[in-house]
Image (cartoon, rainbow over the protein chains, first blue to last red):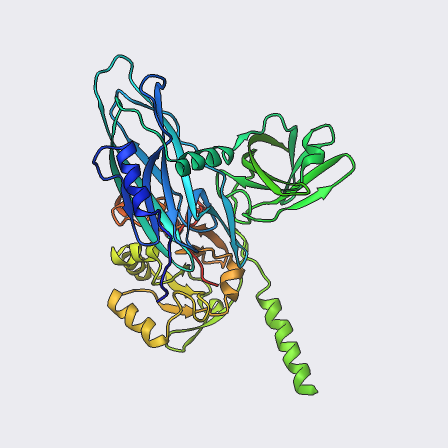
Length: 284
Length: 199
């Protein structure tokens, strides 16, 4: 039995978070290899008509959880928000995942820590001060073996009170927002099907033709493409093509490419990764 | 020198044997494996019969879901009574989760009252890779003509919750019922869910 080491947030900081953001209710759940809690990005009663909030999942070294498409194994992480009807929940955003590969099997998910951000729009002309909510998380924690991670976090926010986010937390919100996929509508992509492969092309006219280092496509839906952490890239003087292998057990050919295109750009100093959400038809 | 050459030839033909890849509606790749009682089974032993291959790892929470609820045993019992051959296959490598001694396997099988014909041991993962087994459970169905007619999940609820079984659409029982009624399998493929196979 291995002993897991995990550097939890310091007790002092933890207590200060409770003090600043929420009033008294339990808002954190720990399951050994992972801990989930609710964090806020600060809120001003006078200025803000919504509260930016996030589910922060912190994972012990070596463990990971899964993206909404888990890939070859695992289980999609689901996060279910339960808030009073008079509040409005903006769709939660998924940071782009990393690929975990072992023996040719590829999964998509997160390690270390991940923040799932959403906004809660406050009702206008409402005198209620307390917002009681719960978040139900269903996920699977894996390293060389897996354990279910199901937890419900109840929490309360006093919406008539200003909150200031801790520097670490606000920094995490900034970092997470930078890791959110952006639209890939302007890249100039096309896709064609040939035998058991799909070719995703960036033409020379695209500004991404020269800026692209390596790239990878991760589908939103399983079953059409072979999951892979390193797809072949064909470089031509007029275009770049990413070659995607079809899933050998697919029962129909995909009509479109819908998912994330992750581009890695190499500069002298660093490697940056950017995820684009793409949805393009596949021609024959 | 002759001995060395013979070993090379055996290795070459073994690699050819396992280089096949399973494909839907094509002949299911053949294999020979020993079970937890050291008895040897070959797929070719079951010509003319419907065969279910169930990838297994007793320690995986998804496998536990289907065994602790008796869902898997009930399916095994129901369909083996109809003459279907049900084989569990374990591709966990040595020292990986799910790789047990024969005694341990037999003890667990007895405690869980499993109804499969045999628990086959694929420690080197050759058969698992040949079939593209990704998860535990990962289910395959071979028809009477030896064609692979289903590959995928046991059902449509990718969770570890036993409560989900009741409301799940079970792809395996649907496919087996269709085959027993001499119909084509409606859903031939689905996304498998579960723990990764511990190759």
